[in-house]
Amino acid sequence: MKFPPDENRENHVSVWDVIVIGAGVAGSVLSRELAREGLRTLLVESKPFPRPKVCGSCFNGLALSVFEQTGLMHAVHAAGAVPLARFEAMRRGRILKVPIFEGLAVSRTAIDENLARAAVESGVTFRDGTTAVVASSRPETSFREVRLHTREGVRTVAAKVVIVAAGLGRTCFEADSVHRSRFAKHARIGAGCILAEAPASFRPGVIHMAIGRSGYLGLVRVEHGLLNVAGAFAPDFVKLHGSPGAAAVEVLRESGFANIPGLADGKWSGTPPLTRRTRPLADDRVFLVGDAAGYVEPFTGEGMGWALASAMALKPIVLRAAECWNPQLSAQWESTYERIVGRRQGICRILAAILNRPALSSMVFRVARVAPALTTRIVRRIDAPSPPVPESMIAT
Ligand SMILES: Cc1cc2nc3c(=O)[nH]c(=O)nc-3n(C[C@H](O)[C@H](O)[C@H](O)COP(=O)(O)OP(=O)(O)OC[C@H]3O[C@@H](n4cnc5c(N)ncnc54)[C@H](O)[C@@H]3O)c2cc1C
Image (tube, rainbow, N blue to C red; front, side, top):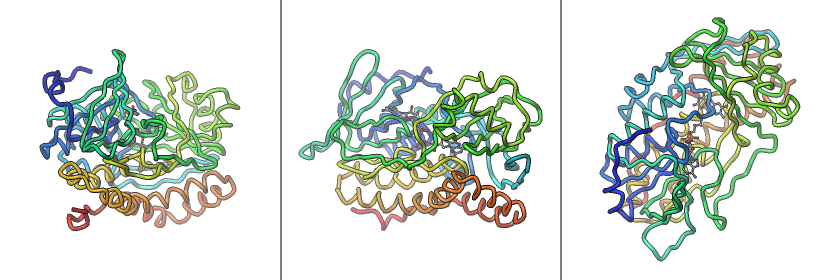
């Protein structure tokens, strides 16, 4: 991806105000917000852009409220986002239809590129193809070092504040880091691909959710009529079928949705185990946000909403930290994150646990079919925007 060169500026800045690691939705939006506040901000991304990303690619009301708030809706529409009207889940040939009040579908390849571009236009320096590793803390200094690994070699830079928005990827800390990830016992793995051709029964505006015994699959039309396919599977189930594509074909068959020719041979990418929690959420001049802080299975399609809402809640804390570091800001972030995301993830943890138990999930599916009003209420609750963090709650 070609971004305007900014070598001059980078060469003259040895200590940045902020380094943001990861140009997913959280990293790009937060880095842009910080640059707009006048902070010298470096955004580092390990993959060359544009890049695909395993994701259902559906933005819910919470995510869209952040784009509205930050003036980024144009970037979403320019990527060709498709409005969503309905969620249709199919299990053993039975269908559950739930209206969607607010939602858009757009591939992560397209939207993430637009968000990174918007960040650059607001003054962020962006380096893709660069893997960042946060160096061990040296509390006697007034910055935190970060090692940047590129094909050319390793370079050390530093910042008053480092934000880890690196998603579910490998750890981006040196070995003696205090941060530890705990994975759920039966965590599923994610996989996804994009198909150019698919049966017309997969209609634009509908999230088709195929539910099988050992996994589920979300299928949605994104820009240019492409079909985005993403699922979560028990690791043994993928092993049994030999590949994520073959596992997806089996889930689709079990659910009762139409077969998609070529699905098994799509260009599939995978993820590490999904449901996890990383703690602490902050350390000397470092904050974790988005999936890097913790994630619950994607069934309700909220990950990007959580990532974006938590990024916005972190913004005032980072502004304070860049002005003057105060260790209390770490505790501040832990409690703010719990308030913004922790409670919302509770509903999804319960759903993930239900989906892991076929008998229970069959019962819940039946109840949801006969009580659509209850299902709709849950969807509305999940979609609700987060209140902003009051200034008075941020440590000085
Ligand atoms: C199967 C599946 C379906 C999903 N469906 C939906 C859905 O429909 N709707 C929804 O809202 N959410 C969905 N999600 C969740 C959503 O994808 C994530 O919650 C969201 O992408 C988190 O955003 P993020 O910015 O925290 O991280 P990411 O979007 O994962 O971005 C992290 C970035 O950091 C980069 N990176 C990693 N390590 C480094 C490093 N060391 N140095 C530099 N860069 C690094 C990565 O390459 C990546 O680009 C789904 C997830 C899965 C697995």
